[in-house]
Amino acid sequence: MGVKNLWDILESCKKTLPLHHLQNKRVCIDLSCWIVQLQNVNKTHCGLVKDKPYIRNLFHRLRALIALNCSLIFVADGSIPAIKLATYRRRLNLGLEVTQDETNLQNACSLQRNMGSEFSCMIKEAKDIGLALGIPCLDSIEEAEAQCALLNSESLCDGCFSSDSDVFLFGARTVYRDICLGEGHVVCYEMAEVERKLGFGRNSLITLALILGSDYSPGVHGLGPESACQIVSSIGDSDVKKQTLWILKSILMETITIQKGKNECLRVIDAYLKPKCHPADSDAVCRVLSQHPFQRLKLQRKCAHFFEWPPEKTDEYTLPKIAERDLRRLANLRSTSSELGVDPPLQKVPVKCPVSRVVKQRKVQGTECFEVLWEGYDGLQTSIVPSDLLESACPEKIAEFEEKTALGRKQNQRKPASKKSENRLAMAKIDLKLQNLLLDIESGSNTACSASFSSKAAISEDRTTSTAVCLTKQDPHNAGCRAALSADTSQYEVIDLSSPSPVAHSY
Image (cartoon, rainbow, N blue to C red; front, side, top):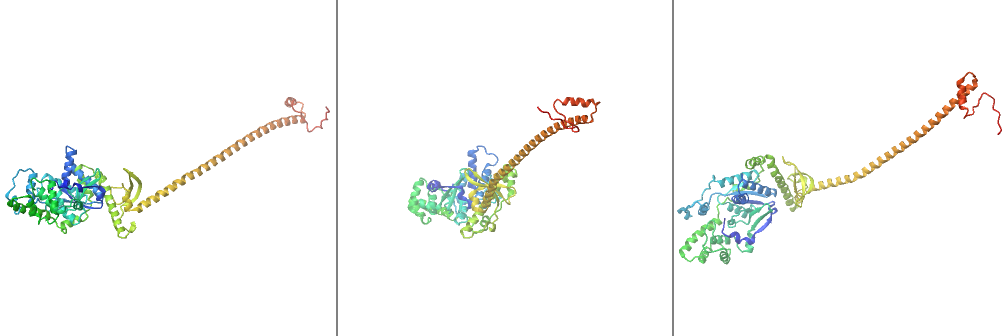
């Protein structure tokens, strides 16, 4: 929960940023807050809870952030602070009265969490999924939001996800309260904006917690957000410990109550200013800040266990995001190098380019993209990435693709011209064949006519010769010759070449 009504007070400082805002950032996640959010979403939208939908939603949320090369660190709650025991038991509805040790906070100790509870088991499952995706988890000494705030205030992360508003009181500078994958945005609060718009620094927010109430104190009865803001504005953001007595006098009248309240307020202030956390230079912090590998086989087993997915489906959901993350890392490296005046060619960049080549251009929901062929990812061949990402990571691959595309267009332009030439050549061949065929037909016709004429001449010649022979031999007994002669003499005048020339007739 955090501080009562604090989110309402900070409403004017809320910013809704595109999800892309988290690209190349390192972010800490208050894991308990996320699990509670995902539980509430499932109860609201699903009604009946099937298998483990909160783990499924967590998995998809992590996929989206991984693709942006957003380095994530889970932070889990440790022991329950002694100052929070009364609030903790009240939330669990245990109906237990506050013990004397809990009333005397100086002698109270923090309480170890029940690691066998249902919620603790859910946290463990989330850790397992995260570790398989290469997301480490830092187990806090006490409050997770306090550990997140320390990492943020020490500039070891760019922001922290938490819905507990007291994360600001622990020193956080950038807080992401919520994330919406469907609409693609995050809800962000910047402490610099709070200081600028409201005039409230960290000490002012702790003072608000003392007045309004928080996980550590019940607050002052009868005072609402407006009155509390007026009091805090009048005090300013000076040392909150030095102002405690003045604050109490302005609120309370009885001296005994003031003294008792002062002691309690000081313990609350110390709990916010000096929380029990892993120091920034501790081994635990250094371990989670190092890069952790993606464990493909472990993730396949976890998804088979939680969602009953085959390995291929897990790869389909995960590998394109891992490849896109690596491409963003390359883009970030080249951009940083360029800012430093170093701009080596792609072949000399120390990180190997994961893209083998560009396959084709695409447009996805109005966004220009490229389909690329990946190299070095077992189980992944191609996927689609934004064109601006590819342009920043490896513009050489785009240039190769465009050059190849232009060459293909030139070849396609030449092909119609060659086809026309082939058509003209084919038509010429057809014309030649037709001409030869016509010549053959004409030649055949002339030959037929000549053959007919020769045949008739031969027949006539044969008949003439036969007659001439008959006449030359003057064989009176050859009846056949006579008959033939008598048959043809009606049309032809037969001349016997062996006889004297006939006498010329005069007409």
